[in-house]
Image (cartoon, rainbow, N blue to C red; front, side, top):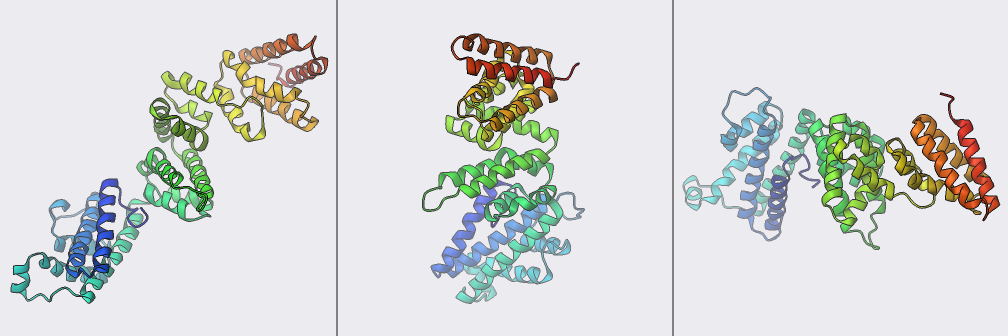
Length: 376
């Protein structure tokens, strides 16, 4: 993916990768003619693809798909997509294409392929790849593949990711969220093993997804949300779990179509642990604004269980109180407040006669929550 990550079409990119590998395999096998012909084919494909990808550039010549190699070289040179040096070398490569026709090779007196000529052809391919990639970056911005590749290869990529994202078009940001980052994640995860652990790379991809989602437009966020709904409805358990753990939190509910919000809310509500812990803090917080009164017991019970647990100290109980008070204050709702009070009363009715210490703790929790509420 890294070599041709500036190519937008995945099938076309895969074909180029295959031809590139075959070109180098031909060199290794001393198949000089095959290497030179493949080199010419790759160069022509790269130049034509550049012309197709930049249709807004004013040109007087015909449809890029109908250009021959010499025309493509001239246009790309004129637009500084390739340097004069590269253009000259590409023109030399043109003559190699005659090698595919033995009769023409005889008529033109073309020298037979050799290790030297094949080496030149392969070097020109690498030069054109580098120059076209740089030009496309300046003209079209970064592709989703280039951003994902950077995240995978560079342990410090997250420190500059916002800058990379700003160089990508909305189309590429959408592709990054709905296809490229998840695909990269799952491909790497599939090859993860004890001998080559990829945990750090997977974590970077997950964090990159969150940052890309955060900086995207509302429209792109809604498209990413629709993609998640599709995974939730059609994906297998492992895929759904990966998406829910590594890419999305309950905040996605706000971008889901209203007809699907109940399903997504129930999904994230049931993923909450039965005891509260700081690791799941974000999940409890992000789902709270979307809770119905019927959801309150499932959301509140982990807090209560942890609050009255003998293992909890004063510091943890203070944290739980602040968390509940902060959320109920920030997203104030009389209905949810009443549901919280009602759930605490249900716990009290069960514990008053069986465990006075725990009942006392719940009474204290309820009083503190009520005291923290705004008087309006």
